[in-house]
Image (cartoon, rainbow, N blue to C red; front, side, top):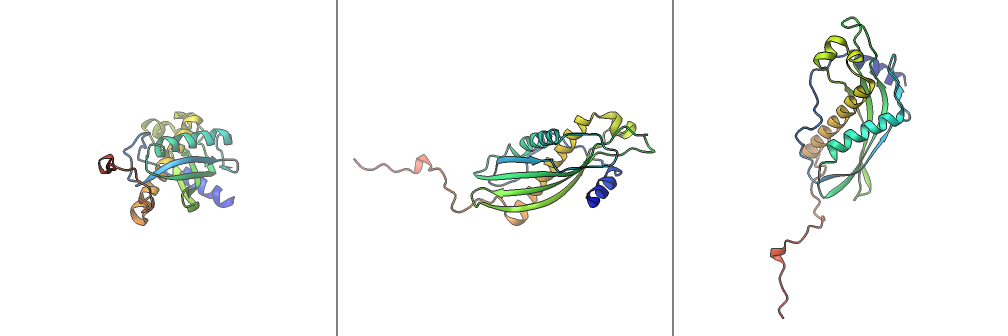
Length: 196
C-alpha cells in the first residue's frame, strides 16, 4: 500500500503534454476480438487529498472506455480483458502554479485467451496521468474539471495504453496471430457440386 501511495503522489505532481482522443486510429491487433471486459475497483487505494469516487463509478468508467477502444476489433479469436484499479488520485482544487496536482491511476491488466483457456498476461501494471489542457494547465485540474471528467479521462488513458500495449505484443511476440487450426468459412466459388 505504501508503494502505491508513493507512486500516486509522485505521478500526481508530474505534467502531461499529449491529448488522448476518444476515437483514434485503430492499432494492428491481428485476430483479436474482445469477448468480455472485466473491471474491478473494490480494493483501490485512494491517494492523499484525492476527491472521492466509488468502486462502482470507477468500474463503469473503465468498462466504458475499454469497450469503446477494444470493442471495435472484429478478429476471429476471442480474448477477455480484466483490469483492476489499484490506486488513484483525483486532483482537488489547488493553488495554480504553487500546488497544481494531476489526477492519476494505477492498474493491473490480465489478458485471457478464451480458446486456449489460459492467461497470456497476468498483472501487467500501468500508471497513467490525465491529459493537460489549456484550461487545466492555467487553473489546475481540480478547478477545470469535475471528478467525473477526471475519472473518464483517466479511464480513457488506461484503455489507450492497454490498446497500445496489445499492439506492441502482437508485433513483437505474435499475440493475436491467426492460429493454423482456425476454421475459416468456405469460399462459395470453391465449393464443387456433386455430379447428378
